[in-house]
Amino acid sequence: MNKNLFEYLLRLGDDSLIIGHRLSEWCGHGPILEEDIAMTNMALDFIGQATTIFEYAAKVENTGRDADALAFLRYEREYRNVLLVEQPNEDFAVTMVRQFLFDAFRKPLYEALQNSSDTQIAAIAEKSLKETKYHLKHSSEWVIRLGDGTEESHEKAQYAVDTLWRYTDELFFENEVDAALQAENVIPSLIPIREEWQKTVTDVLTEATLSIPQNGWKQQGGRTGLHSEHLGYILAELQYMQRAYPGMKW
Amino acid sequence: MVSELQIWQWLEEVSDPEIPVLTVVDLGVVRSVKTNGDQVKIVITPTYSGCPAMQVIEEDIKQVLKFKGIDQVEVELVLSPAWTTDWISEKGRIKLKEYGIAPPADEVDKSVLFADPPVIECPLCHSTDTRMISQFGSTACKAHYQCNSCLEPFDYFKCLK
Image (cartoon, each protein chain N blue to C red):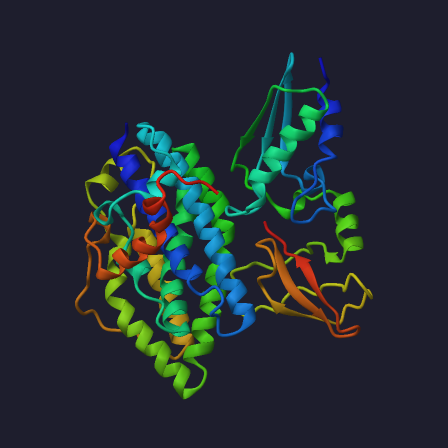
């Protein structure tokens, strides 16, 4: 098994799964019907992406674990998602800012991964990029509307940016896994991706009249399995059926 | 032994579970059909990553072909090249419209923020005085519109390129 490839696929898949789960929590609770539908539509895209990524990861691992086992039967410390995606929804502003910060990262990442020397990763990226463009447009427009909206919406959006900013550094986490895969042209360097992220974020937040936090404390841990307390609660819900009724199927 | 052409014709009997007026061939999700003796291999591609219809489509294909006497059917799901609404057939576009869903129009680049949504003709009264209610509709592939002339809401099969 290619351990580095498997590890990287878990990062991609777990980011999609967990942010998809967070969006799905809005089902039936959206501030307006159209947003309720939009957020569950996006949740479906992310969980669909996670499925494809986990199916490939299961093939790479080749130990008999399938995509469902990877999604539902790992322990907290085995999840590789960034801390950003597991942060609670709180209100609509926090959810949309979190989404924006993530989409602005995912778009250039998928663009670059389309050129991966691994044909399956390239195919997943090509497919997912089309959906990601929609997501980024949607979240960017909301961040601008909220930031440049009423006094209250501005305040809430600024609170969201200030609260979530400390988790953005981790999007660009790299270690020996990346170095090995970069050497084989499986994945790109995150340096140009960070530049593009920075530009998108600066443009949109400026347009939204939101101030960009100055560099302060940055939190990391998710990529190495050290999560915030929130992931445990997510997993308790996500894994409930498989833990209570092992092997159950729809 | 059965011809590939015959299989394509039979696949016209498999409809999309969410938009039953379209066949899987109209929708452009069937990418290739290969036969080898009694074995048939069909390659399909999803419309959206999370499209819940794909599993049903796979089973429906197998079932229809089994009914035609073909037991050895392999259905493979491939992601690349990624599906685009350009693959919806001309016949499919007409059927969509008759069914009350506006077919995909050429849209501007998705990266333009707050871009005017495309002008979509109401499939019911054919007025072009319509407005987008939401970019996201009843399924991942549709947006939600309303006609300002007849006031009816309708689905628009959004452009994906």
